[in-house]
Image (cartoon, rainbow, N blue to C red; front, top):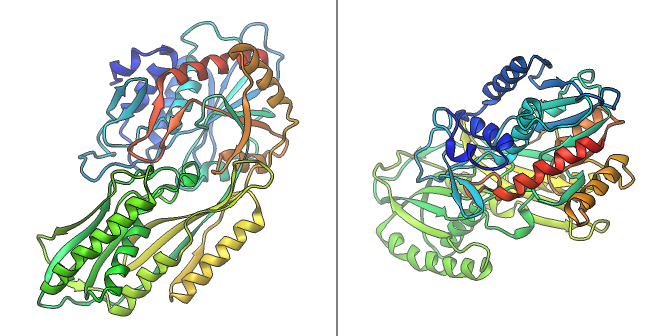
Length: 488
């Protein structure tokens, strides 16, 4: 059931569609339910729709009267979202709808990601299909809904080269009101793993969970320049500081992060400490908390380091050698901005994110996600990560990456969009590139003649429970989209 709190907002054409999206439980792989929503909407309107082999959906919307001879325009959005929640929130993405809340001019979810990335783009495309306002003017449209953008860009990577007829594309998946993106970074993930040989836990000592929490997290491309805290890096630093202070501990668990493209907000280590170590760790923790408060002043004001007693004592712990190489690996891996662009002022050129530490089957796995708009620079970062991993005795697996999208400032589509924006908004649009992976790079490889731009409403802190969308910006986004389609 759609949420009336959302449906009542203006413009109703978009918000009513977004309310339907929020009502759908969002487990991993939820694209199938979203695809069913799109296909049912197409069937209801009596328009053609098809899916390619990977599951992407294309809906072909006929031109409005008098615009039948206009060129085809592709509008692209993705069906999946990042499902992140705070650890103290009871939410099952496989069963529970997203619970929106309004605070002033912003919409949030309750303790989880909202899914405005890219739910608002999907909602706008569905609103075009429905034409609930009855005032649309446009040529033939191809509404492209891709799958699996957030976890690997798989839908765009495997998009059928024959499914699209249009030669110009509007990507509805950017997150800054009044900005046109005409380029993006390429990226690649690295998996570093070892197979530890756990040993029995010592019979004496108390068990604790060392918890790093309260960080903002966020998108590892969009927010990486803000120097937000990385929970995994902080946790490794905490444990190694204790070790350097002569505090003996056994490590039974080291985990944190949840998504390759999100800065980790929380991380946890289960440790066993003897009585002397319990007392000695307190000043180490306090000193680190003070240091981090200074380093992250004005950035992370809710960071917490806590030692929480464990009700159930671990039965197995890491060997000292495995423990030490894991902690040193996480501390040594590069994280954050590594280079700024010399071509586009203010644009991050190269970065890397220490994203996830987890147990996968019987292996300890650390994932990193690296980005750059310069291919050789990306290769250099990946080589650095490989060297660090191999020095630490980890197996290193560099995954298939995705290409960047080279800006074209002379794009005819861009020129039309700039003109329409200036006349409708009374101001010049800003044009830039983004330090994140957009599907435009992959679509451009499959359709090399495609003319593309990306724009969207104002969305902040995507990929984290602080995700929010500015309600008024959705109206501006929708009005501009309708005006642009009328001009194309």
